[in-house]
Length: 262
Image (cartoon, rainbow, N blue to C red; front, side, top):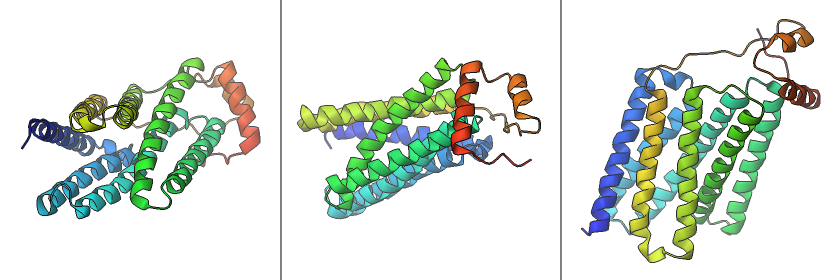
């Protein structure tokens, strides 16, 4: 076994250990109840790693069966990751029903564009479509997370500390994947084995950030039901400043979402 493969396997083992620790914390602290899609995403990562490792041992690294297993399981991971991003976005914006009504439509439109472009660019070959969708999703995640942080800062939205850590972990790894794909394709394709090592290590850093966020039980908070007159409610609510109030009211008039049930 060559030196790059040895180091890569060690980094892979480290990432599996970190993911196992994260899942243990999610279930032991019962945080999986607040983050079901995030939990499913990490479970999908572990299942994929187990399937790929078994395929490598049975058929070898370069076998077509191993290739198909990797990209078919990668499709499931991408779906789980997209749902986890939507879940995290709702943690940022779900309190403001009008703004969230716009946000989830934008996320759905973004997912539809990525999916359509992936199949068209791959000429309906699903393995290549998954590869294109992988790159597009990582770029979209980085853009969405940065937008969430900028929105929260501009409108002074209160975001829980653990949600900020989860978003930072997603953004770090997504930026690393986009940079990795760009460099490998344009300049360093023959060094792809070496360049994959820092990518695995950065994924470990992201998982450690998530562990830091979820090492303790997350307090369960519920959205405040609209039990009083809307005008009085906005005056009493401490979380909405004038600019955010105006934006949310405009969007409420556009989408007219149903009031939450008590």
